[in-house]
Structures are given as C-alpha cells and as structure tokens.
Image (cartoon, rainbow, N blue to C red; front, side, top):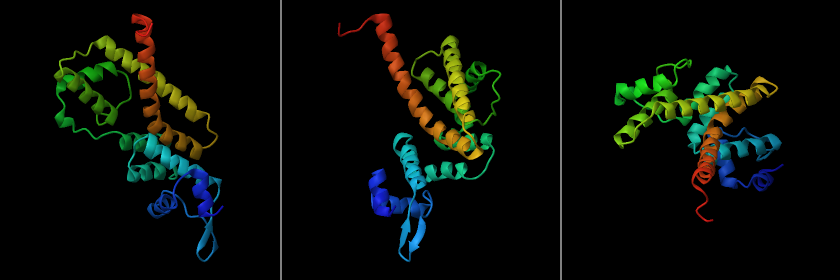
Length: 206
C-alpha cells in the first residue's frame, strides 16, 4: 500500500508516519519508484504498536523507540524485561529513600530475585515513604496482599509470553505487555475497588 493508504488504514496522519520513519520507529517501506515506497501489514501493526505505547502506555517517542529497539535486538528475554521496566519506571535516587521504607518493602518481597537497584523496588519504597509522610500507615498485611497480587500478575504475564512461538514474538509481548500491562492493571484495580465497595457497603444509588 502507498503511504496515503497506510495513513487511512491506521488513522495516523501523513506527518506522523513520516515522523515515525525519520525517528526510526517505523522501518522504511519497499522502494517502488524514486520518490515512492510501498508498505505492508507489518507497517500497520508497527504503527498500532507505537500508538499503543505512546497513547495508552504514556511513553515519550524516544522511550517508545528504546523499547522497540529492544524487541528487534535479539536480546535475552530477561534483558528485554529490564529495558522495558527501566523505560517505564521513573528513576528513583536510592539516597532519597529512608532505610525504614526500604526495609518495609524488602520484607514484603522477601524471597524475590530482586537487585538492590531494581526500579520497582525503589519506586515501591518511595510510595511507602510518601504514604507515611501523608499520615497513612502501611500495614504489613496490606503490603503482603499487594505483593501477592503482583506475583499473580507477573506469573500471568510470563505465562502469556510462553505462548508465543518464537523469540521475536516473545520479546514483543514482554515489552508491549510491560508497558500496557501497567495501564491494564491500574484500570482493573479501579473496577475491582468499585465492585468491592458495593459488596461491602451497598450500592449508593439503590
């Protein structure tokens, strides 16, 4: 298909597609004439992926390129996971965290194969610290429930990865799933909170 047809197929403007091409997020089309190229369904899929990462996942274009590069790099899956997680995670300075918050998180995730610099560990410690600054306690049972839920979701994520037939598609699921999975889990948590509040306290509209 021509670039104009690619635009119609994906809903992305011509300017956006040309920007993706310039930035290296979208591979070049097959040259059909000196000033023309043709594009395939693979380009359609890539544009949908880019827009999912940026529009739903909230990534900057430069970060989307970083995770797409990880998909195309033949890296081990653990390395692809690391790149995706570090890309979507705000960098936290360990020196900004108090020892008690770090200790609380380490107790909640005891037994996990977690590096001291793991971005999730540091981000979780900062959340605990801010909870306490806001005058909210962080009950150990509450944190344990969060850790248990996180483990269930992580297992589901890896189960999904293992259904993919080859390394390239597994890497793609790792990266896209890491970014979009955060948005999915946050949305489902809100729905679950609403349902649980109705179960416990009744429907306020009835």
